[in-house]
Length: 204
Image (cartoon, rainbow, N blue to C red):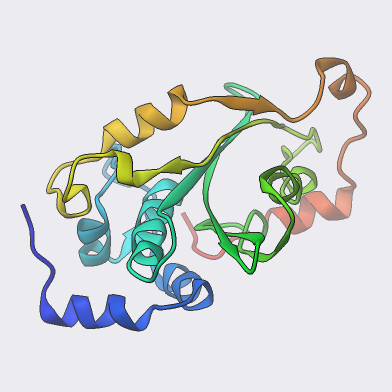
């Protein structure tokens, strides 16, 4: 079990708003898992590695928010299986409204200001940004928020990967975005949207 250093604790203490946490997540390199090994690092190991993919960034972001009075929540955005990548965000509530932290390498699927009345409103803000290179819109379901406090104490300091969180996120209740019949009539994203969606922050 690892322990945070005083320097690390001081950094986490400074990141006391969702905006500051998002800025910090943006500063981390994207974890492309270039050595071919899948990872799901704990917050302390992500912090020390200086990189994160979406769920690692979400778990770290949720943990940091929990140090400042927020519930440590993460939420699964599920796409068409085997055609697109799922995403994980960090829903948070301020003044009764919902926003989200997000670690992504793309120009879209990013931070959401806390202006949404409920979780579904928040999720739907991602719908039109979620499409393939051929314009097919792929977001199909979303999970209820998972509170990371349900896991054993000190999970955030583990040496190993946190695959149990990923498994639980898959198992919890999910909600359909819309009836299947709706997707059969769905218009594809415009060419200019598709080109904008290809912008990335870090090169693979």
